[in-house]
Length: 69
Image (cartoon, rainbow, N blue to C red; front, side, top):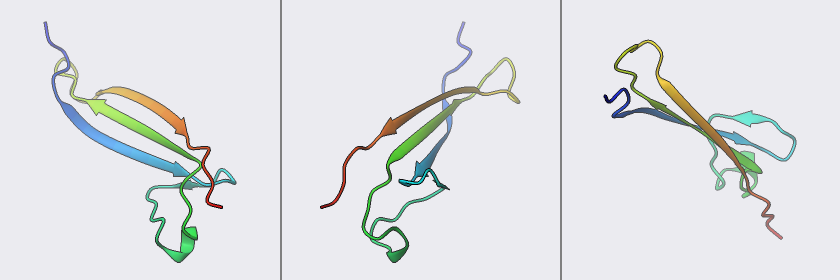
């Protein structure tokens, strides 16, 4: 029995060094001053055939301990 067979959505959340949350990140922009985020969260949602209104969600976060010097 297959309950989950396709990826429905992928969402990224970016965090700066102060913990502020952003939906997008452009390191080349002046707003981010050529820095990378301190952490990125990834949310994957897979279709749930038995209950389409409630997808299967998987989330992970990765710290990026890199600085530009």
